[in-house]
Length: 142
Image (cartoon, rainbow, N blue to C red):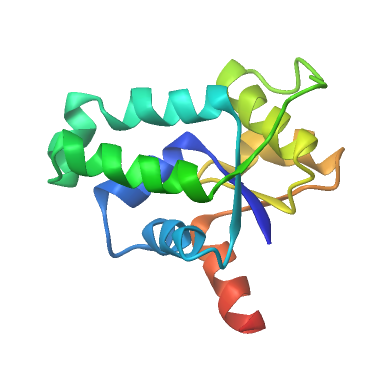
């Protein structure tokens, strides 16, 4: 399954290694899910993940988070955003995630904020799933 992980879902994964979001990241690192990413989204992940409040909540060092992000970038399928359909949402960061999903022909956007993405994603036949919903679907197929 080809997915785009929104930044909030990634932060959830970093802050708690036992939840569904963390399992989504593990599956991507194992290449059992294909995570799609462009340069701007990778920069957004780093900018947010390395904020002091997220480092403190994760219990991880800056270096540990950087290594995890490096690994995620290494397995991600790079997407070149050539077409932007803006504005699609009220938040420019949501549009950035949608741009990657649309240009990368994602099967799903994985987010904790499904209502922010649902209407826009539906236009492009991209599903919007919570980390728990994605994990449930993955386990059913396996």
